[in-house]
Length: 334
Image (tube, rainbow, N blue to C red; front, side, top):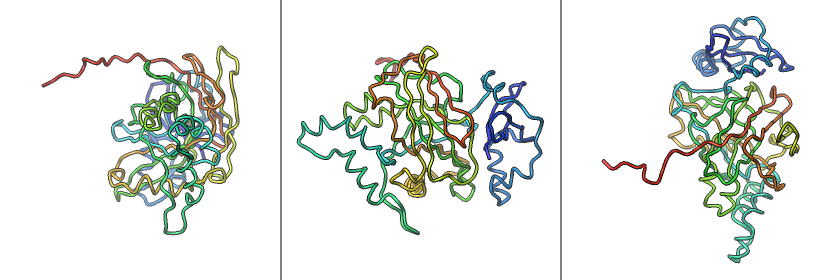
């Protein structure tokens, strides 16, 4: 089951149930957001699919029409962006350490250290990243990206600050969560996301990882409700001037990961500040495929396309440089 959020012809927010081929959606009548649907499901003590079965559907709308009109929204939002947390975990996929290790190997060799800290953390994940019943596995790398204000809708420009040294895509699975009134996280489902990072900044020193992640991201278009397949193969593509500049398949799902999803969820939600009732969490689960690893330098005007079968239409966004208006003298003393 696939859900999208969009603006109707009156520019009012709606929820749509996508057809299996992703070509049409039927509006869920009386539902202005996936947030509202999920909150109603929690209150009724049922899952999201069961809640949807109680709702009436409107007349079909062509997905292509919504995309062309740039009416698509991210699949899960909060009315107050400050109550949406965008976070992620890295070094979670088999093979994900290769690029990271390559970034930092030269400095490690200069310091006389081997293996790198990135490789050590990856090896810890391989050895113990799968949880056992009642017992969490190894803690993963974790990072913060921002609040809901950084989440870009499908089809909209993906802004990169003018101080960025790189504008690199990261095709990933994203977990979408709502914290219930009982302070428990409820997973609505999964979506495709472009985590978007500055790999050149990160390569300078792994302690710059936090800086490199403070960038916008894109998620959607669809929210997949239900269990996650273990083995998933998608395609990541960059277009420049209407031609394909680079493309590669990417593997995800637990069969291609050294951490279990439950383990990654535990190590995020174990912190009390992430269990505030009503908050939304969008959590990126990591990748093993980057154009940066193949020497690609993304430019303003390049378009990213991420496609994952079973997750609806492709996620497309075009990079646009965003001027930074903050200056060194901008802080005001009171």
